[in-house]
Image 1: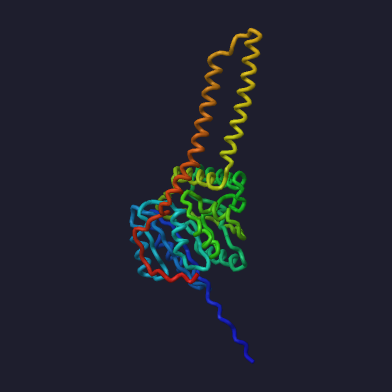
Image 2: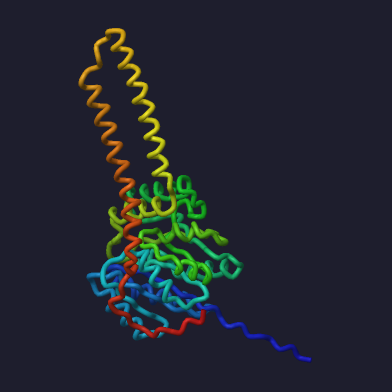
Length: 323
């Protein structure tokens, strides 16, 4: 008797690409994806989220969407940041797994089959970690190392690669879990690492940017660092408590010294030392108030329950979500 084999449909892969001033890179990235996936054993769709670029990014993305039904394009009503663009793509993704990939041609699409192999082996989150970063400034590399060391060693998110990752794949169940979160001031990469699941890392050589300049400014980097600390760690507030106890102890010791000097007839210390103590304590107090303000402001921002993003326009066929 002939055994009937059940045909397994090819998995659907969703690629989500945040884009800001990437009009020159999108056609080249599309061509590279077509070349890389021509013999692939999976189906794919591409979601481009234009983060309110001032150039023709959305026009180019829309043209690609009209040309290829696998492509969809969204445009934000204002600049919300690349992490929010990724979350928008996740919410509109139909794939069995989702890849986050930049538009600047620094992350090679031909690495995606390797990420898929690890996913097929049962890995829920596959990070693509960079072994080298050509064309980037030393200050950028230094900030990156500092940030990821803090996230791993201070915050405790050990799943984040040591040198960071902007390129990753997540299983559908991870994407659905991400969509449950409505926090606006949070690093998506830190959130994925915090969630758990089975996570692995593969390495690759990051390519130099082909066109344009990165919109990832120092201000945005600092905000991401503060968001990551305040979202996943209470240690800054705990440090404030320890500092307060230490200053109280030192003040008590200094008070004893002043009292002993008074009783023994020794002249009090001079104006300079007193001003130094006042300025030190005042500066620490202002810093502590600022740290508390960061936490309080984020709590206020979340309590407003404003939408995480607003879509100004979209192009492409919205497929029914099979999940």
